[in-house]
Length: 141
Length: 141
DNA sequence: TATTGTTATACTCTATAACTATA
DNA sequence: TATAGTTATAGAGTATAACAATA
Image (tube, rainbow over all chains, first blue to last red; front, side, top):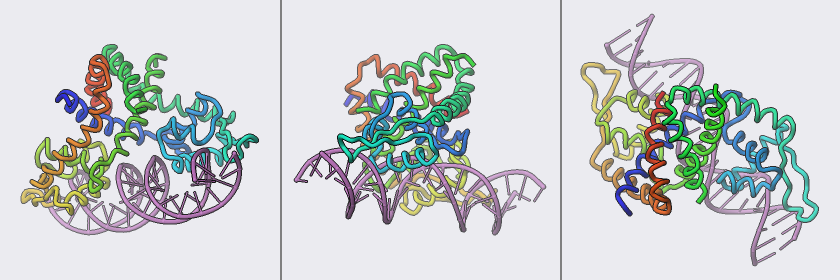
């Protein structure tokens, strides 16, 4: 393992932990949490799918997703339809209310983050943008 | 707010959430958690300081740090010394056992992360390295 | 009165183990 | 038997409110 990698790994680990803490603590609408919002955004973006598929995309274990989906469903932000061909599964889809919540909440949360981004140079923003794509690959292996 | 910022904010928010999930779930030594390790590393790197100072650096509220420090102290990884000039505070310092735990655990966790980094191109690593510095500023405002 | 830190309490987030229903 | 999902349970992580001790 090259020493460069170990150093980068250390720095990245601490940076990600602290940046994520900030993001999580920034609650706009107290009715929805970041984890719920993230799952909702996956269903909204990728279309209707099973609970297992959402869990895989979100990188959480199935029981964690069960809980997240139960809260989204009881709030009326997603709905289930049964699958005739495999009755163990049901397909989860975002509702109209879910879309509205998602749009509003995403806008508000992004505004908070974007407000910080405007203080950054174009150079800084380029660096962040390039890192997003690499981070996604890091998280999905 | 330029639309570019809103888009970057959205992408960054989801990336950070999922990357942080991966980091947290990667437990090497089950006796120490990521939050504890992060606080320990701050005390180890920056030297002895008060509980309030550690909380500020770690970006958590004082009661959260009280809990983290209590677990670190009972494990023998930090120790307190009373301050004669201000008896409300005490100074927290890392112990020898704490240094050993920190070195070993950091190495193991970094190895896990670095193992993923070796699959990345030099270009990807440059992007991550550049982003670390920007992320730190983002988290500390 | 203001500040430092702690205690009490509660909620979010997530996991593992055990289970149910279906294939 | 294997798979999809749920229930039960527990621990990590964090916050706000109320408090105690000290300045």
